[in-house]
Length: 151
Image 1 (cartoon, rainbow, N blue to C red):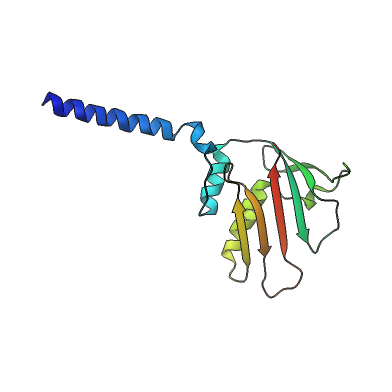
Image 2 (cartoon, rainbow, N blue to C red; image 1 turned 180 degrees about the horizontal axis):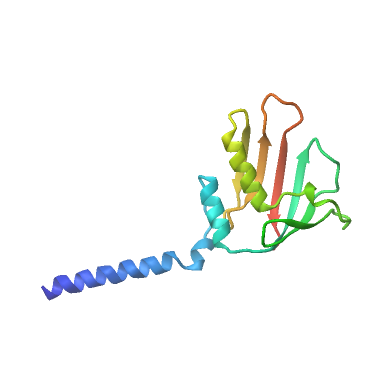
C-alpha cells in the first residue's frame, strides 16, 4: 500500500511541477503559431505590456505619408503620438494600435464579403502583418499593415 501511495504522491508532485513550469513566464517567450485571433490576443495580453511603441507601415489608397510611422500607445490602447520617418508629428488617426488591429480582425471575420490574411508575432502574439480587403467587390478599400513592436 505504501508503494502505491508513494507512486501516487510522486505522480501528483510531477503533475504539480509541470503545472508550475507551464505557467511560468518563460513559456510565453517560446515562439509558436496561432490558429485563432483569440489565441494570439491571449498571448499579447499575457505579456502585460501596458504602453508601448510600434513601427508601422501601411499600404493603401490613402494619404501619402513617410512610412514607417512610429506610434506611441498608452495603457488604454490609444495612440497618443504619431511621427513619420522625418520625425514630423502627424495625426494619430493614420496609425493603428495593436488593440485596434485585434478589433479590426474580429470585424473582418464577421463579414461574408471580406477577405484578409494575418500573421501574428510568434513571441508576443500581436498582428505583424494584416492584409485586408473589407469589401471584395469595392474598389480601393484594400490595405495592409506591417507592424513591429519597438517597446
